[in-house]
Image (cartoon, rainbow, N blue to C red; front, side, top):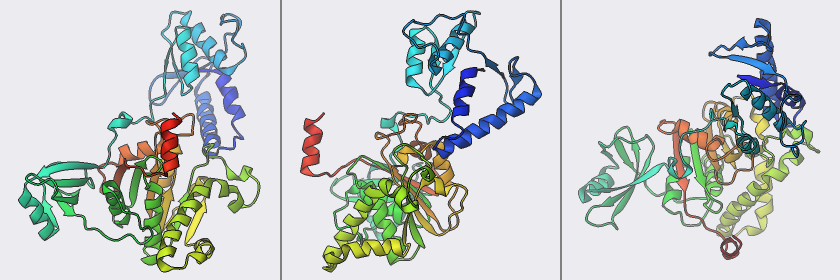
Length: 414
């Protein structure tokens, strides 16, 4: 493995980055290289613990010609100069980078380049685990399921997979079930308390997973308008306010710039995270408004929402504040989880203490982090790593409901 010297300069420039994870990674790399340096010269090459060798290579600027229009001292071009210099010694060279434009420029120069795939999950986004399936079954099996609430099921499936069962003689006769330990357990409708819109099939599956206190990790994917955040918030309010299963609902939402340390932003903690939480406030207002209409107390809407935060039944925090904590007895909702890195997703999930439920919701097709994609984001990674665990359930929502204007704009403004 060859590390161009300019990469060390780039790392040094990131020591005080606003992103906590970047700063932590830079410190780890510095310590790792320092330990290698004690074993020998990095200029000559030092053996790595898992095999192979690592050495630092100078930039080869004097002896390597690049296209004249390329700025000689730009970091990407200095990395390419190192690769071309190594090629001159008739050695096969592969550049490994998350930078798409660097991979393109390498291809122009005839240098093989690859994406860093260590954190990729092996699937195409259209083939990712959806968390449910449809099965045609004998008519009598449905009668048995409705009568007993649970039946034996000899098909091998992932635990907590949801099933839409249809009669083989009447497709209008159906049942909803969840697979668990070679059994199908009937799902029975319960009336939502904090939203009065009719749930579609997949929303019913998602709500069942959210309401089950024996499933501490729930992941929900869906496009804008699929109801994923409303479902997560609605069940969180039910479980926190009405049933007192959890002490509070803790809501986090990655910033658009992905992991900004809010200490760099002006104001107190509330002021710093408020811009990133506005969509959450809008959804809470919609939920409380829905209930207020039924209670005929719509005029108290603002005071109801204020009470949730003043009583700390609902708390909003920055992702960075979850670092190093063990959170007990709380319902944690992570919105826009597709903007998490796998490391962040793992860090959040492993923060769950006794009696805590973690809900990750997001859309892998709407990623703002330039270094993440549908395969490498924390939400997709968590789904693929945790599927089949009795402690996890997943649903991908496919139906969306938007205003007439939003739908019309979507058609005309492509």
